[in-house]
Length: 170
Image 1 (cartoon, rainbow, N blue to C red):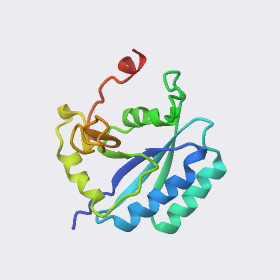
Image 2 (image 1 turned 30 degrees about the vertical axis):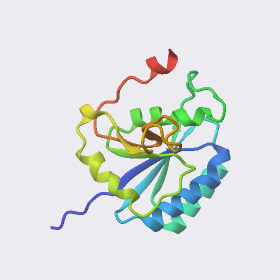
Image 3 (image 1 turned 90 degrees about the horizontal axis):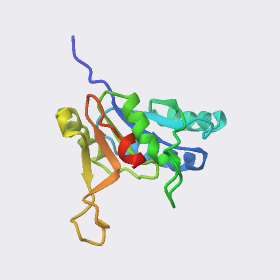
Image 4 (image 1 turned 90 degrees about the vertical axis):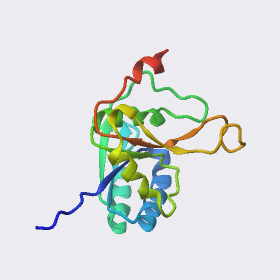
């Protein structure tokens, strides 16, 4: 019997303001993928009405993208910080809820051909390494803004997650 590779999980989080951004991401993921994938969309309770979830699910079905939604509890540490909404921090709750390897992609991202090649690095990463990150540019360049990686694309390997609440509360 032939072994069929399970679709790799892509994870993101949205609120009602990001539904259109997410469907653009879904379309770009589908059009540029070379390997099977599925999407889990996390949302903080009461931030994504059922009508929005239904709309996204309908578009995902038309694209042939398997999708599911995961309701997440509010956390008092998740506060708006300038352009960063509380939904941004849902990546930590999702990582805690999904111990299997997965790829976090910000919902306002457009995928380019080859995006799914990162899954091999995530699947072979030792859990002690913690994360697989996408390079953002060289440190000091105008593109990097001082950061050596892009926090909008994170590969979570299999295994237990590190404590994120303590540093966030500090």
